[in-house]
Image (tube, rainbow, N blue to C red; front, side):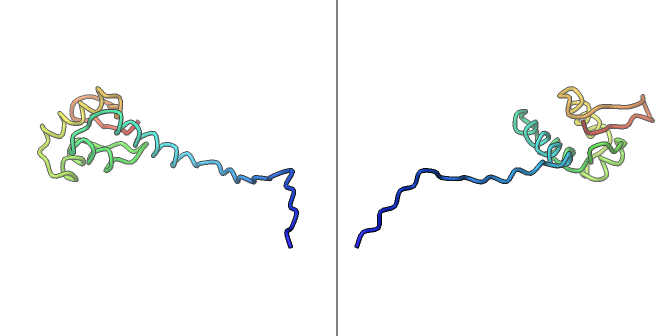
Length: 98
């Protein structure tokens, strides 16, 4: 016995969820890191730094295990790539993830 099946419509239900601002920021940072050729140390810095939190050169240097001058150079490179912003001058300079 054959069953005669006539499907006139197929209903597809998709659930859409809004991504949180944190998820969007993380995706944006990931896509920026992929689009720009970054060194491993630069990637370490970006992973370490939380968005919206100011970090000093010394804090970053201690966390990634480098001396201050090399860390400052890496931070300035990231500023030039527009992945970080710097606040203040000289000893009071802080870096913030964009």
